Length: 494
Figure 1 (cartoon, rainbow, N blue to C red):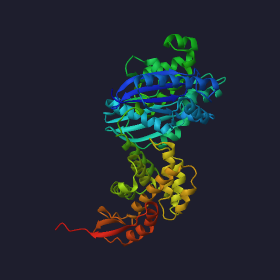
Figure 2 (cartoon, helix red, strand yellow):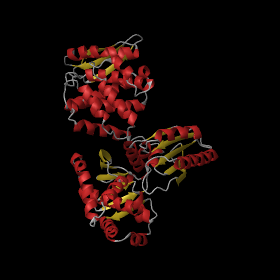
Figure 3 (cartoon, rainbow, N blue to C red):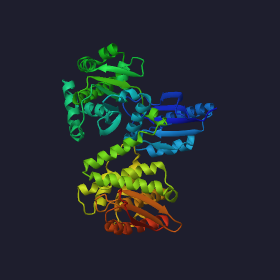
Figure 4 (cartoon, one colour):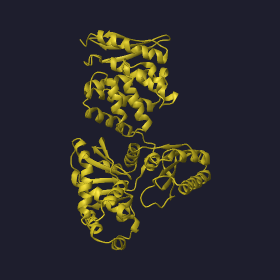
C-alpha cells in the first residue's frame, strides 16, 4: 500500500481529517462538530475539551484502520487565542500523543489560497482576480494579475466579531441594514487606504463563507451568486422576522445572524472593488495543508516586497542584497546546513531588513525589529515572523553578537538558525554597502581553513572589502571559518 498521510485541523467547534497519498490525492475526508456554540468558543470548557479529545481519538482509530503513521495536527488561530488553550495542548499530547501546532490567520489565508491554486486554478486564469478569505474574526483580500500574486491585505472584521459587536450595540435600532453597513464601512476605512493600486474585477472569489454556502449551495464545488441575489438576501433579513427567514431559506434560526453579517460584509467588498458576482468555493484551510504544491512560496517573497515598498526601502539595494544572500546561501550549504525554509526566511529578511530606516536611519536595525515584530507576514508562522524580526536586528555590525544568547523567546536551535541567517545577511548587505551595485558576478571558493568570496567588477571595491571584513567576524564566530572578500577585474568583452 502506498504511504499515506493524515492531516487533522481543529477549528472553533469543528474537527476535520483528511487522509492523502504521497501525491496529495484525497483518500478520505471527515468533518465532525464537537461544539454546538452559536458563535465561537470563548474558552475550552471541560465538556468541550473532552468532546474534542474524543473526536481526535476517533480520528486516530480511522487512521490506524488505513495504516497511516504520518499524522500532523493543527489548530486554528481562534482556538489558540482562548485563555486556557495551553492546557488543551497538554491534554492533547497526553491523550493522543500528537503535537498540536497552532496556525495564525496569515497561514490560514495562505493555505486557502494554496488550495485554490491546486484545485481551482481556473479562478486565477483571468487577467486580474480578487480572492476574499473569510474567517471568524477577520477577512483577507488578495489580488492576482495573470495568475501572479500581487498583494494581500487583512482587516480584523470577521463575521463572528461583527455579529458579537453589533448585537451588543443594536438594542432599539430599527434600520439595522443601514447601521450594519455604516459600522462595517467605518471599520474598513483604513483597510481601503492601505490597498495598493488594483484593477476592478467582475467576479470576486470567496473562500471560507460557510454560512453563505448553506444558502446558495447548488451541490457543486463552487457556486456563482449575482450581486442582486445577495442584496435581496440582505433586504429580506433586514425586514423579515427570524421565522419568516428560516422558512424562506430553509435555515436554522441560530445561523441567521452569521449569514446576515457574511452577506453584508461581502456586499461591501464587492461594491468597493466593482464586482457583480461572487464565486463561493468550498475549499478550506485543510485543503491547502494537504497539498504538496509549494510554488505559492513565491507569494511570501512578493508579500515581503510589498512590506518593503510600504516602508520605502530602496528597491535596487534590497533586490541585490536578496540576490547576494541567496547566492551565499546556495554556495555555502555544506557549511551552514540550513534547509529550504530557512532560505525563504533569509529572502524575506533580505527584502525587509531596512524597514527601520523609514523611522530613522540611525540605529535603524532596532526600529526594523520593532516594525517587523508587529507586521503580519503572509504565509509565515508567528515564530517565523519573530525570527525575521530578530534577523533584521542582528544584521547590523553595531548589534552585540552575544545578545542573541539572551533571547528567551527562541529555543537554542532557533537561536542558532537566526545567528546563521543573520551572519549571511550581514555579508550580503556589506557587498552593496556603497548602494551602487558594483559587483556584477559573485563566486565563492571554500577551502579547508577559509572561505573566499570573489566580486567580479570593473569598479573599485575598497569600501565593500572594508565593511565586509568588519561584518565577517560574526560569520567566523558562528561557523568557525574566516571569510574574506576579494575583487577580480571583470574581463573586457573586446
